[in-house]
Image (cartoon, rainbow, N blue to C red; front, side, top):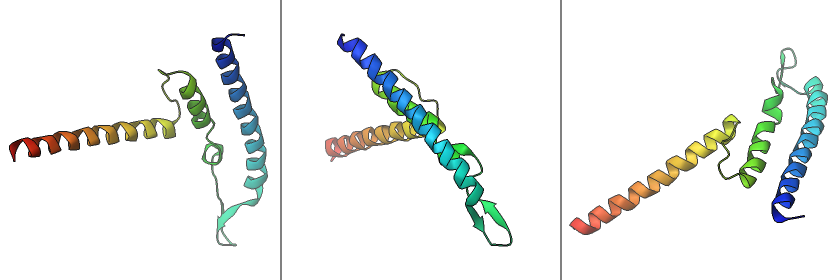
Amino acid sequence: MGIAEYRLRMEAYQLKRVGQERDIALQAFLNQSVQATKGSEKHPVPKYKKFSQFFDYDKFVDEIRGNYEPDYQPVSKASAEKQRIDLITKRWREFRKMKQKQRGGNG
């Protein structure tokens, strides 16, 4: 087995594990959704209205695939938002460096 095949098998195994974790989380969600509420005793409201609020499957898949595929584009909103924030932070740091050089050169 070569390195490329090993990496592919590791990615497949980790994706399989995330699927199993999702199944476990789904079972926990179903158990919890029957019981967990917020609000008053007279007017209880479920704590989680959607399963994705409890377990973000796409986020975990994005993390795994991002480790193995350098040009992978995230699917989940949380991962896409994190990527956007990272890009803004990087650009802000570059801007600050440019401003610092301008002040040093003119002063």
